[in-house]
Length: 304
Image (cartoon, rainbow, N blue to C red):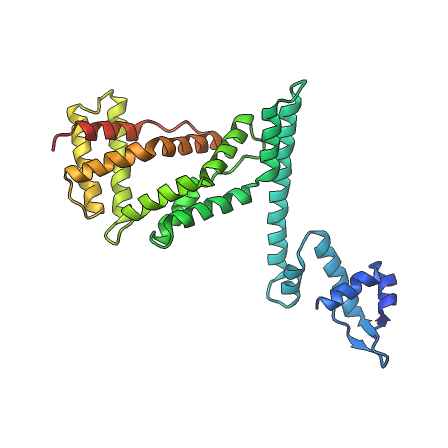
């Protein structure tokens, strides 16, 4: 079978792609000509025509020139490229659905309010991908290299806000408030200082979080029985928490360490609780309980 040869004009007529576009692809290295004539005109083959058709199809799906170049150079497989494009397209569709939901909510009222306009701006200015990037940047600025990568991954998985496809006005407001929190320079600076004070070389995060999980389970059981923080049970749990957390942090379970706990709670609890409340709104979950308030009341009542 003879391989046909085409001038750039002939390839343009055959493919329906303008000459200027073919020349652009050639100049970018995506469609180098099979050969050139004695007069230095570009000549293309049937294989080049098929390659041009593939490039056009991928561009129509939204693939970048860099992604197409990687696929054509066999650095990225076609399956990988299509999977990446599908993921991006699904995220784009989900974003459009969220904007449509906001518009529907605004149009339920005869005259949209300023709050409706603000929510629409939130939906058009911040995607879930943007929020993930913002959350990752927050954690990087707060923790630096002092925190274990495994803990950081778990914290990001648990704490990254994500807006559902058909959000309620309350969820959009929660999303916007979380963005403001994660962008707050004062919050970032404060969290960075506290992270450095906790994540010392002696800190054992696995032991700390295991102890916290066990203590929270004990607190919930005590609260279900209407046990007061200052009860015998409450004081016992407070003593257990002080000892276990001190061991994980290589500290002494003394008055200074209790004061550190109470100071951490005083300065951060309201903000941390609000963050968890907003996440719960986004996820359609029950609001977080008052466990940390309870244990700090018990710590306050504990006699050392």
